[in-house]
Structure formats: structure tokens, C-alpha cells
Image 1 (cartoon, one colour):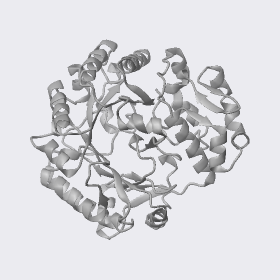
Image 2: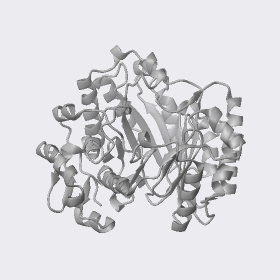
Image 3: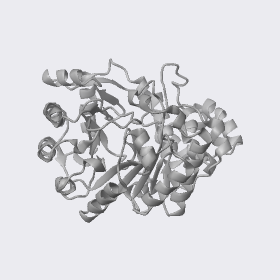
Image 4: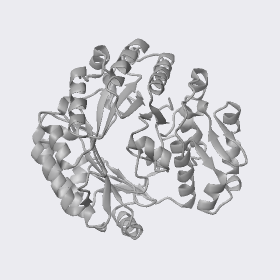
Length: 461
């Protein structure tokens, strides 16, 4: 695989194609998960996965936050009472034991991630115990060769926190920044000084974290082209290994905290587009590789290397390395992927706790996709990760005539081809520079579950 070229920012074209749709962190998407996929089905897929001897990726959802950010759409529990973490962690330890018993101990954990919420909400002793319990039930690496990451809120990183995380085996960190402008921070209730962010980045690097990622959001209230340019300048001075520039999706009907945002203060659609265009221009001009959608990385980062080497993957954490892993996810609302299946834990903390108190895995719903789903998933992942698809190679891998099987979808691409988003020839599909930012629209062509009237998605840009 070659490095992705710079996307062509065509504001008029983006406006024309700007519609709501899935982010394709899975296919079929979570909207298709069914309650009749439960613990029994999950155990069957786990047993089957042991036959493959694939390595494992572990995700832990730690849902607690001490402060409420108005823009946030994550599953979280906002509280200043740190003691609330203890009963949750007790149940999480039980889940780790139940999950660990399902997998062959020869299957090494190549990837591990603590997400949230704010993982550092828990105490240092609780962090040590969580990793000790995990190590007791899973085959973790001791050589620092895996990718063990954690999401950090710089406001929740105290003295000794980063040193402890490094001691526990973490080697990459993702920091939420969103925006450095004080007016924007006040509008979304996330007051975070530049000094706090810089201090965490510098300490993490000094301790040997090999990859630092910063998250920004465009489209927040009170943002302007000039204010975001200032944020970009200060963030790029830190030279993070990865940058994510997320689109703020204002969906107050789904996410109650967003009701506290003044919709009149949101940037106009054209201003929002201009901010995105500016970010792409600044990042690519300073040496960042465009990975896809909202992700950028330095050429030396593992994410860029995975794209070059054919190991890029997309899951519920976004773009990821280690496409060869089965994903075991633990904690309330966590979504996992074993073999071709997907599963999700209970959203409700009380129900999650009750399942574990009864000695059961807290699986609420999931999906065992049929053969057609799996083919469409393979097409979508190939396009969303590599922006190209070879008909012969795909056909050989899946024993089908691609052009015949997907004749209707290829015909549906004709208007996009006329608009210069992609090119289809006898050999395959190549997404052109104008189509890079509209890859979600292109992938929607293969989604047999669209349109849906009962699913609410964010807009593509």
C-alpha cells in the first residue's frame, strides 16, 4: 500500500454531498445489533475464535468523568465522588475473569486500550489492581512491543500518573484538547489551559511514550476560522504523532448535555467547512499523512505504517493498527468483535452489574452477519482504509465475480464518478482526491440497510 495523497478540498462539492450517514466503525452498524445475540452466541464465537489463534486486542470502558463537557456524546457517568468507581471496578474484575476463561492463554494481547469517560478518574491503586487482574487472566506483553494506549484528559493527570501508566505498560496516549480558545472552552464547559496540555505531552515523551495523539473538534460554538487557526498553530508546535480533527455533530435530541449549547453560537455551515479545509491544508503542509476521514499521522507513526503495509483496520475506536486481532471489549456499553461477529454490553449500569452479580457475561445485543454482510464489510473496510479496491484481488479472496455480484452498486457510483469523487475501470475502484473527504458517502452505496427511518446519524462532514 502507498501513502495516501493529499485530499482535494472542494467546498461546493462537499456541501452538495453533505448528508447524514454511518461512520462505519462496523458493518453492519450498531443500529442492526439484535437482542437475540447474547451470551450463548458470544461464547460460541469465542470458542471458534480460539481455532484461529489470532492475537487479541482488549478495550476497557471506564465511564467516569469529574466534569461535564457539553459537546460530549460518549457513554459516561459524571460525578465528583471518586468512591463510585470502586463497585464498578469490582464488577469489571469479574468480567475480566469471565472473559479471560474463554480464550486460549497462548493468544497474546497485542493491543490494549483504556477509554472513557476519563480513565484516570480512578486512583493509582485502582489502576495497578485493574492491570494486575487483567494480567492474571490474559497473556499481556512484557516487552513494550505491543500497542497499549490510554485516553487522557490533561486536567485529570496528577503527579506520578504518567510514570505509573508507563510502569503498567502503556506506551501511547491520546489527549483530548478539542480547542484552545478560551471563549470556545467556556461555551462547551471544558476549561483546559494550553500549559496543562503541553505539560502532559512533554512528560509523556520524557517517560518514553512512543506515540502521542491529540484530538480536536471543529464546528464547536464560538469557533471561527481565525480562532481555530490559532489553535492549530499551537497544537502543531507540539508535533503530535497523530491528530484527529473530529466533526462536532450537534444532536441534542440524542445527547442531553448538548442541550446546554447555544445553537445560535455554532459556526455557519460554510465557516465550519472552511475550518476543515484550513486544518487539512495546515496538517498536510507540515508533513502529516492523511489516513482517512478525520485522522492524520506523521509518516513515522504506527498508524501510517499500518496503512502502508496493509495492516490498517477500522473499529469502534476509529482507525486502528493490528487488523489481525480479535477485539474483546469490557465494561458498560463496550463493543467487541470476535471473528465475524459484533457484540455490545448493557448500556444501563444497573443491568450490567446484575448480569455480573449473577455470574453472567453482560452481553446485551450483537450480530452474527450473513455471507453478504461480510462481503459488504470487506468492501467498506477496504475503501475506508485504503481508498481503493482491486476487483481481481477481491474476487480471488472471496471467490466471486465482483462486477457481477455488485453490479447494482457499481451502477450507483456513476454520478459520483461524474463528479470526480472516484474512478471505476476494468481493474477496480480508485477514490480520487475530491472523494477522500466523502468516503462515508461512497461506502453508503454498499450499505444494504440504508435508508433507515429509525436511525439517527451524524452528517458526513
